[in-house]
Amino acid sequence: RRDLRVVLCGYYGFGNLGDELLLEALIDGLESCGVGRGEMAVLSASPEETGARHGLVAVDRWSVRGAAALLRRSETLLLGGGGLFQDATSARSPVYYWGLVRIALLAGARPWCIGQSVGPFRRALSARLARSSLAACEVRGVRDARSASLLKGWGLECDTTCDPVMSLSATANDPASRDAAAGRLVVNIRPWRGDLPRRTAVEAVRIASELSLELTGLALAAEDAALMESLRDEGLFPATSIATLDAGGWRSDCSVLLSGATRVVAMRFHAAVLALLHGRDLVGVAYDPKVAELADEWGFPLWDGDGRMPRPGAPSAGLSAPSAGERFLRELRLMCDRALSPGEERVND
Image (cartoon, rainbow, N blue to C red; front, side, top):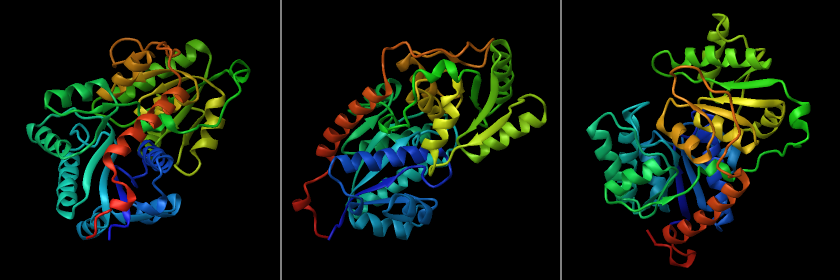
C-alpha cells in the first residue's frame, strides 16, 4: 500500500540555505494543503539531519535502491524548487533528475514540479533531458517568466508563481527601527567563474565607503564564507564580520543581521529573497538569469558586473513579500488538487 503521498527531491542536504528554505517552504505549504508530515518523505544528501529537522522520513538521494523503494511507497515525486534543470553550475544536475524521474515512473509515482528555474543550458543534451523530465510531470510550476517561455516553446503548459520561500514568515521588524538602526551594508558574495566575485567585493566596498556604512558579510553556504574570508585576507573586502546562516536558526539570525541593514548587496538568489522578506533596499548581482528575473519582477536595481554597481534601492513594483507568499499558497493548493489523488483512492502496490 502506498502510505506516502509525496516524496520531495531537490538540492537538499548540501548545506545551501536557499535550498533548505525551499524544502521548509514546500513542507509547510503541503501541510496547509492537507498533506501530513507522515505522508511526506525527502531524498537528501544528509538524510539523518534532514529527517530530524523536519520530523519526516528522509533517504539518501544517492542510493538508487533506497530511492526506488521510497518511490514505490509514494503516489508522487515532487521536484521541489530551484535550478534543478540547468548546466551552468553542473552538467550532472539534469542527468540526475532525469534519472530520478525515470525511476519514479517505473515505481508508479507520478512526477510533478514546483518553483523551477529552467536553464540556462550550455549543452543540447542537458536541454533534452530537462524537456523529457518536465514533459513527464503532470503538474508544472516555474518561478519566472523566462522559464515559462522556455516551456511554452517546448509545448509544455505550466503555472508561474513566485519562489516558494516567499511564503515563509520571517521575524517581523519594526519599521521605526529602520532609520535608528541604519549604518550597515550586508553583502552576499558566492563563488563564480571569472572575476565577478572580486568585482562585487570592490564595488560593495565603494558603496559602503560612499554611504559611510559598516560592511558585513552574509553567507548562505560554507563556500560563500570561505570566499569572503579569502577576499578579506587580501584586503579587498574589509568586513567587520561574516555571518553564515543555517537552516536551524535562520529566522533569529536574519532578524539580528537585517534589522540593522539599510541596504543589501545580494549575489545569491535567496539572499535577495531574504532581503525582500525583511523589506530591505537591495541590489542584485546578475551572475545567473534567475537573479535578473527576480530583479525584473520586483523592480530592484541589478548589476551585471560592468561599470559601477548601482546603490541598493527599494523594490518599485508595488509588491510585498507577504502578499506574494499568500498568492503562492493559493496557487499551490490548486496545483495540489491536480497532482494528488484523494486519500481514499490511493493505489495498492
